[in-house]
Image (cartoon, rainbow, N blue to C red):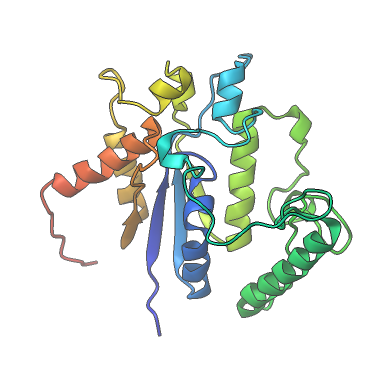
Length: 256
């Protein structure tokens, strides 16, 4: 019997925890342990503010197919382990087609059913984000997810990312807390060199607000980003973790 443990994941942005620790989070929930995601820099630029092209790209809504193209993310200098043979139309073997998507969908359904068996629920996965009778979207299921369908056309980029994070938390039966601090692209960082460079002196790490929220949640395990991609928001979250580790230990005797 694994005791009930609370795990808190410090996510610099919406989707960071899902993409970086999705397998770990699913495994923890499968053990019945609590998971909370703190999404730190989930805030936007404010009302009636149009995004620049670079801000949209940096938030993941631009036209860059691989962002950013810095050395930490390059793969062009790594040769394949075996020859990559294209088909008659020149498509690589990993190109998605209708048949492969359906196979992936069936495998995802199997995994989803196995995951939810412990709760005696039946939920199907939906990898296409297109609603069918057999595969509803979270926002259209009464009492599950949000209570009303979400009009994505009316949302800005920041709101869309937060809805995606809420859907993920709903799926894994976890919880998410949005601190709504503004993203780096709204704090004056412009261009890849600044966004993936050094933290500005006038941009301190959010130590106090994160410490307060962590103490409120009383977790037994906390996960901070390493910041290997050097994004300034990831660096700031890492700095919070290092600051908390450097602080003095305080022992509390439990009591009534």
